[in-house]
Image (cartoon, rainbow, N blue to C red):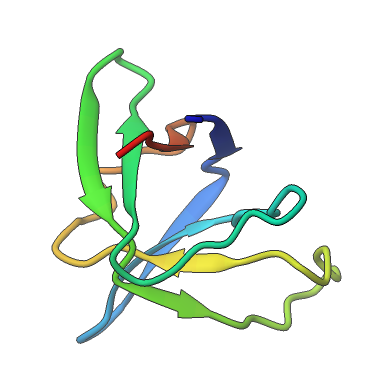
Length: 93
């Protein structure tokens, strides 16, 4: 079942890897996320953009984030493609 995973509060690029939208995904129950999983980006202007998870990162941030938070990397997207306030959704695919 599709659900809103998080709302983008910031994003940064890792050269050669891709775009990292933050905060990240906090899985619910037995939910698992893997490289290649599809996601939907719903932008503040109402438009949508499909993408896939290209990487999963473990980040030690300050202030501390939830221990089970998954930070994802999106390949071939820029900061302009994913403005602050965009919603990251899982898909039913």
